[in-house]
Image (cartoon, rainbow, N blue to C red):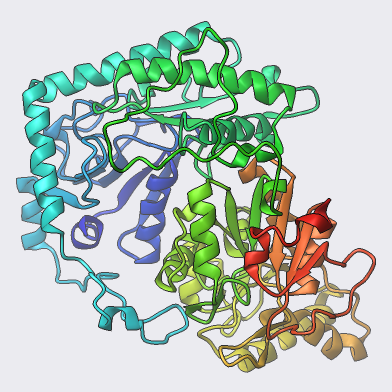
Length: 630
């Protein structure tokens, strides 16, 4: 809201220090709000603040929860500046001192620092920001509410009673209760002291532990409440690199299995490591206990002795005798009973560190969840079994796909469970654009801008005069036939003029997929065979295609990196993409029979035969296929 209403009259300087600041920078480009200069740095650092034009607006994040980085100070922002400073303080409010005279629009969350239940936000505007509003031109407010799905159909959830933007009165009362607690502690000074005490516990442990280190090396830029840690390369097992993330992944799963720590694995777009919240609602004693559990998990993970049943809650493993057990509360009716001891795997899911699910045809059809899909995810959520949605859907960013699948009724806990071909393609596309190459996309402009942002060298293939690389996204929201004709002409012209043709980056390689009615539809992956057939009479060489979606290796590598393991099971309904791709990556594959292959007898090759064929997703967890595994 602040970006949309305030930006425009002046250029903007954006400080990109974590995934959230990058998100705001992308929004500025996507919505075309202002000309932008991005200040970018290595992960774990804060960008250089010298040379800022005081006449320009500034957008920054005051506390990066995924990088553990914050601006060392705001002294570089001049009090008599002409530009506005818009600051994301979601997790900075109540956890660090903020120089309010050097900010003009400050946004923060009810729930982050004080642990409230309401996921709502607040905004404060300086007199200078209010003056900008009065002087600024009237603009429409983008993305306030979308009445349509990604495919253009009406989102019927809005007409079925879904709460859109009304804050719950329970949440309002909850934040009052949280503020009363903060006041009783001694107000803001006491909260900051609690954060400092928590940071001291973690700093002492990191300093005394040779195998762990800070993600943010510079103490001046290091967040005191968003603790982010990494495993130094020299301490990892022989043959591994820090990017593998296998030890950190094993540690996270062990700690979750023991009920000692939850959701401490680093964000999906951050280097492998840990993120630990140490805000004012956290007790220093609990962090001390966590450090002991981390030491225990590191010893277990380095030995590689992760039991098959480690993904199931159990009480059979404890830290060493020197470590204190987790102090579980016994006075809460919300506590679930301890899961029974499970000494041996009993189901197919028990045999894998994570399950990979295709989306279309396996979990959803169109905008509706398929029978049993929500139940299987809910069961995995309850057991703590990691899983990821691995999809060639390229009609939007991971956040857009996450919202679309949640609207379909799937209980996916967080956006980092989405591994989309478009998201994997993003890094390659940005590399191509940075090199000055011209890219055109097969897909809607909405999809491309949502995933990659706007760029002068990135345009739709239906309007391009020429391009160096063709990016294949989705087939929704544009004239597929007209675009294919134009692409064919451009490939032919390049072949005649230079003897070479553009390359293809294929995010969505699906040649066919099932429609909502169960019939078959050509997917965007048909572009390559269409081009090769059309150019064959002219003696065209084979077209170079880089597959980032299934069955390409890149998307499966991303899954293994996030899971910290290569012991994964791919569940899909298409042999040519899901099954062959998984097998080529060294993973086991589970073919679910559906309208696309209701006989389960689609053509197989030696390298494309699934390990399991079943009619129901429930067979992953009901034990019926476990004898086949044995």
